[in-house]
Structures are given as structure tokens and as C-alpha cells.
Image (cartoon, rainbow, N blue to C red; front, side, top):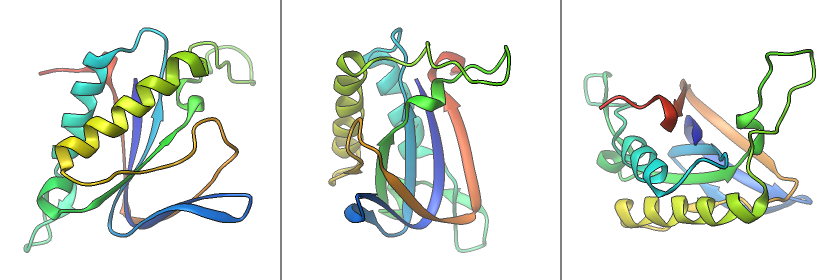
Length: 151
């Protein structure tokens, strides 16, 4: 399971020019799922995400987490994060899970993040052609992969 975390001043998801989700200060997370992923990957990444200290403290040091900030979270499923680019110029998406596997894991990721944050998590629409708008703050963009975890 891979996530791309973007610290934002605001973020939103639109489908056919209609905004379906919007957040103010917080994180926009793009989530890529592969067939070998399970609830252990979710638990690991959600805890890392919620507690990742990438927001400035009063001294301008990135020392505060989303939880500390009481910030908002927007999670968007994005199969292209599982792309492999080793051969040729056209990325392969064979590692990305199909909807029957990915959708329940995406929903579980969002519900677990919501439970730990103690608030609703904004989402995209699984499988839809979405427009994701962000105002990246910093910019701060971080990539995490549950298969490369170190405790």
C-alpha cells in the first residue's frame, strides 16, 4: 500500500464540475492499493499518517502532526501510485488492485483514519474520473509505502 501525502492549505475533489469534497488546512492523501495489501498495511500507514510531524510549531519547525493540529484529511484512491516504470515508456498498472479488492481496503483506510482522528474524513469517489485541486503548503509532499516499513 502506498500513500502520497500533501500538506495543504486547502484541497477538494470535483466530478463533472461539481465539488464533492473539500477540506481546509490539513492533508490530501492519494492512496494506491495492491493485491497483497491487507489490514496490517492500513494500520501501519494510518498511524504513520496521523502522527507524521510535518506541520510547523510556534518556532517554524515541522514538529506538529495532523492530530496535534486538529487538521482535516482528504483521501483519494489512485491506482496509478502502483505503476511500475522499469520497462519501456508506458507505465504498467498490473500491481494495482482491481475494484473488488481495492474498494473495501480504501473504505477501511478512510474509516480507520476517521476513528483515530475523531472526525469525518473527506473522500473522493472510488473509480470516478476526479479532478483533485490542492493548494500545497510548503510545498510538503511525502511518499510512504507499507512494504518498506521500519519500526
